[in-house]
Length: 119
Length: 204
Image (cartoon, rainbow over all chains, first blue to last red; front, top):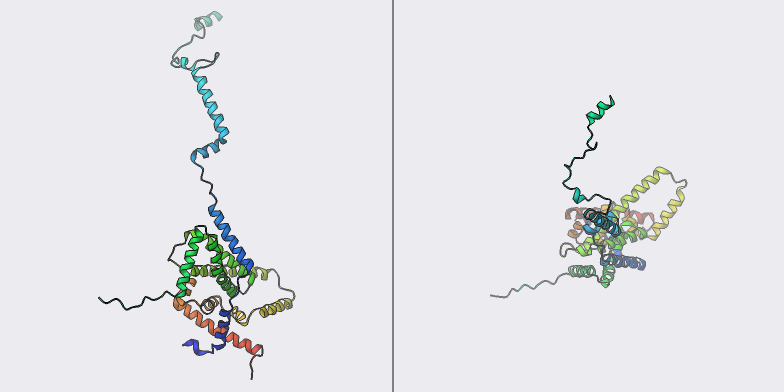
């Protein structure tokens, strides 16, 4: 064997001595290792914040539940005004279908007659 | 039919240890803190010992050992039984962390060299001698080996692992492990012989 080409006696003694006296784990290091282990367990056992659903994400985008409430109120008011308009506002339901109505802006007077009178 | 006369071989100590460690890791993964204490007691010294032998520096070895164990805690829930032994996995992680650290410190040293030449070499030399006195002769000799030889020699002759396991840890072939340990041992013997001569230990 090539390993026997040199005297391994002293080296083997040193290896044996090293094996017989392995370095002790420093107590402070052991404590740090255990603390890490505890932290890893704590992190895993802590309830993980659930990924918010699409409704929650949408609400967040609009401005929280307060924003959603405002939006809902505005929508309800719009619908209400549309269906039962207060006095002074044209009734959209009544207007519907009247787009073909013609109005006589000159109240019967003839434009051609008016121009000729001016001559 | 005659009953088979073969005696079922008792599993060797190391495989029993490996099974126990895997069981402890599973217990830890399911929230058993006591298992963490047992794993630290079993694997902590080996991790720290390997890091210390490879780095030759206590503070750095402590950092590496803590990081290696942290990675073990993190992987515990995903640990697949029967694929690798816990200690083998931990040795490999430790080895990789040591390599990373050495690579980074080499980069830092190079950067320092570019910045300034030490004005007086005496303090450095004195500190080196003091450091050398603190370490045993084997450690001083180990630090003079090329990295891969040092890793193979430490795993083989101090951690007493079998060559196939070392091959798995170092991610090389068994033949490569044999070659590294043989060359490493020869180099160590030469270094130690030189040291003995230098220190006047030769008695004649």
